[in-house]
Image 1 (cartoon, rainbow, N blue to C red):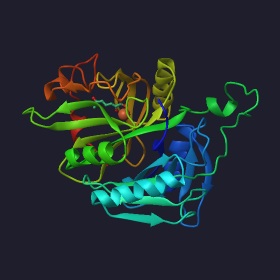
Image 2: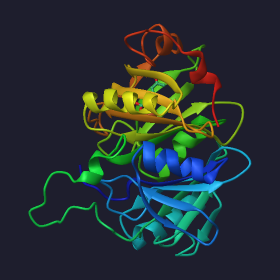
Image 3: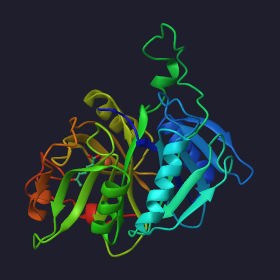
Length: 311
Ligand code: M3P
Ligand code: FE
């Protein structure tokens, strides 16, 4: 499909209880590349195959969770256009100057009704993926270090008013609904998976009373063998696993959910399918999330932590 408007998830800023412990987890166990530290003490990382300067920013704080999640848009004109459309829709936006995040251009930030801060930006320094662009090899030693996901792929956020958030993402930002889980009474959506691309989701939401919560940040691998290898590496490093390795019925992703040292859940996954905006969204009943295998297709059970543990 033509790629205009919102291109992809670009960065997430995560709160960790102990910075160096967080760095050890994301850099040494997950295998991300540390690309910088700023005057506030924040640490910047990227996955090996990402080309822009950073996709994960760690900030030490008293509580775990997510400060903001950002999408890269096509160019400056697109950024200005979205800013105008968000305001016309009735949302307040703020402009955060270029350079407030290292190697990152001006950002447009707004709060959505689930209580999350979402950002758009058009510019971030391209530092490359360690491969030359002329006749490159397929991988480098950096791509074999730790779990070594290729990119930050999506996040799942928990908060109230998911119906309003769906409208903002679909009517203003150009996303489309790929899958959903109905509420127990079948009247509304308990969960939605939204795409701005050809991916099965770029962001997802679950209806939840408490605003602004993070369910997981997700990192993409390319094969099922790599997901199993991730399970080995996480276990060798005593990283607590939540679910998996298994397959979600929802999105068909093959997955592991686990917790970082601060209690932020992260996912390493592969697969899914390639949806288009004209596809009819796949619908799961609330019961189907559990016994229908939506969450865990082989086991067909609703792991209790899925609905209760967030950061
Ligand atoms: C993902 C994913 C559920 C599926 C979640 C899906 C809640 O996290 O990456 O595909 O059933
Ligand atoms: Fe996920």
